[in-house]
Length: 102
Image (cartoon, rainbow, N blue to C red; front, side, top):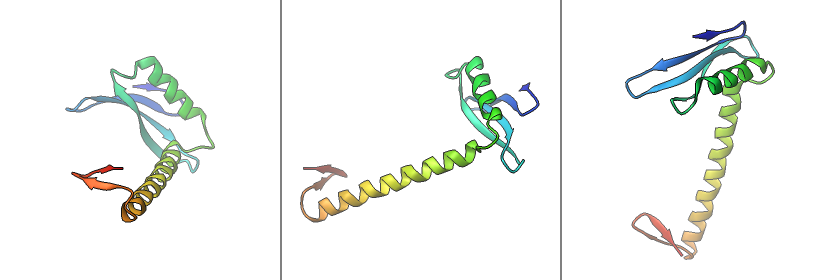
């Protein structure tokens, strides 16, 4: 475990593989934990750099930011699904075997 005053970086080993995790304090001083990436794809120096970056940001909660990004992506996906449904209903697309064809 690599620790500092703000948080700790550690390698979590599971049967499926290992991942870099970091503990940090969010805006409301609650202790949080997030995954940086999977070992060996993320090297120790990159994991340490990411953990330092997360711990240095006091105004932004990384978990909250990821949740917002997921919400935006889900909204965009719903929009694409709606467009495809409309095109399917007006006969522009044919559904064959679960795939859309023009």
